[in-house]
Image 1 (cartoon, rainbow, N blue to C red):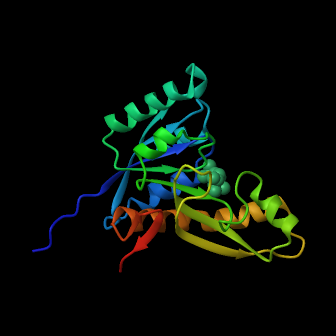
Image 2 (image 1 turned 90 degrees about the horizontal axis):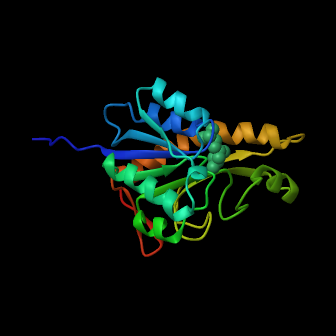
Length: 207
Ligand code: GRF
């Protein structure tokens, strides 16, 4: 007999429009997808993704960092919301907050991020400007486990795009974003199904 596999419960943390969040919500609607998005949390009350999540029938909360006296208090409120929603995996999707080492440790191996470059190239902000400045001919996106170093965690999935003559930061942003959505949904499925596991600071793949 084939047992029913329990879907992993996923929270998506956002700060803005949430197009990756929407892609995860859409991908997770497939009956055989190993995860479901159960809550979206934004650190900004006006994050556009909150409305988009609600329109998709997902619980969406604003927990604005500005309402808290310290990062620790804000993160405690986020943690409480994650616990209340019985979350297994946290996906950062355009979440523009540096996360404390304590929060990273609490979710180590269970927290993912998407970064708009082929890591380890171009960490931090303005990755498309960095790519144009460096003159690379290939650029792309990376989904990785979150560790204490910013944009340094073990890689789960990457997709490359070409850099074309005449590209601007805006055209590159659009081309990379068009592959981010599928890449994130694929990476989350690998982690939720246990086919990609973080062990000793590396991603170990099975299958
Ligand atoms: C994406 O480019 C993602 O890689 C980066 O922030 C952007 C978020 O876009 N971390 P969206 O809010 O998912 O549309």
